Image 1 (cartoon, rainbow, N blue to C red):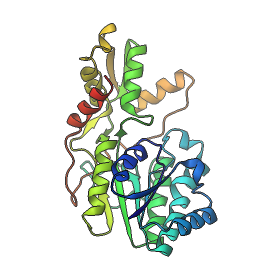
Image 2 (image 1 turned 135 degrees about the vertical axis):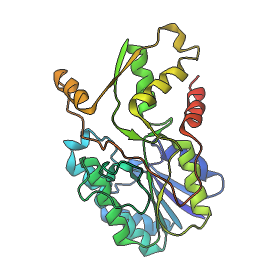
Image 3 (image 1 turned 30 degrees about the horizontal axis):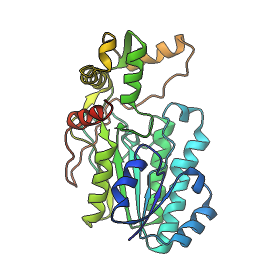
Length: 294
């Protein structure tokens, strides 16, 4: 079965490539192979390859930079998804697309299920661009899996886990936000779950796929430093001190340092999976990833 994978060199895309390469006829594109913001080029490539499945693992993922690069974020995360959906519909392909917890307001106080409505206007430009992509997807094809996920980590791309390890080796003290809640997700597990979802022939629609268990960035950072600190690599220096701060204080610290103010992220964007098999706890997945770094 032919699969067209877009973004095959990214954090998630590289794992998807591994998962699908063994049993599928996969065409894996990086950004240089296809400009997904060019509607004509998208249609031409899709008609040329005629895949049965298109997996879109591309995206503009810098939440903070999107605040000053709205047009680019909107083009990649929003309108381009519509182009892919139209092309998929034309050749009869299933389109798998990934979205984010940041489409929700974060004001609910409990987790968001697949049936909950996104915010009318998400708090970040990134969230707004991803919501536009969701709307473009559902408007232009009826054969899709829209997978919302959150806090993705793994090899092959910039992520919070790697950032904490790097900063922990450089600094004696780390200040980390303690009033934003979410679910970490291992790219390896998400890629495997994506294949399982496709092969299950589940009903088309929206799915929430994350590792189980929620946390804050602060508690997450403590866990990362603590677990990585048991390896030989870390014993060369003392553990950094991790200090909890609220989002407002974190923004002020950026201003004092002359850095760009972070985007206003949702405070409670926990995704609840009610429609598909649950993934393992994030702590277990993180241990596996940290062991792979030794």
